[in-house]
Image 1 (cartoon, rainbow, N blue to C red):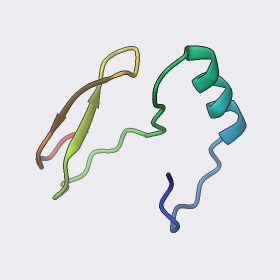
Image 2: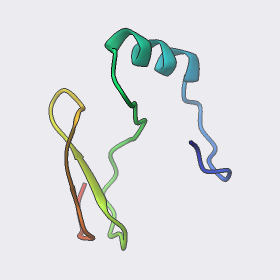
Image 3: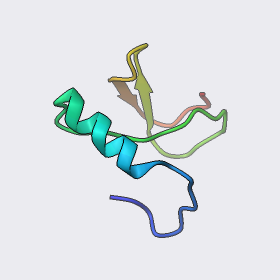
Image 4: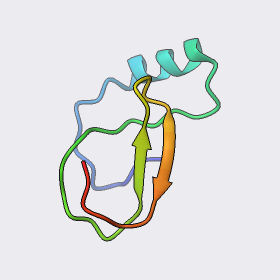
Length: 60
């Protein structure tokens, strides 16, 4: 799933290959940016696996 208003140079073929090679159930493409948000937060561990989700707060 991808928002229709996203402009990206993401290598979708590479992302798909990594997804298949990892045998993951899901794959999320994201980048780090410090912003004040009104939505939930997705936190990852050092292996870029989802470690936590939380409600709104200022984070990176």
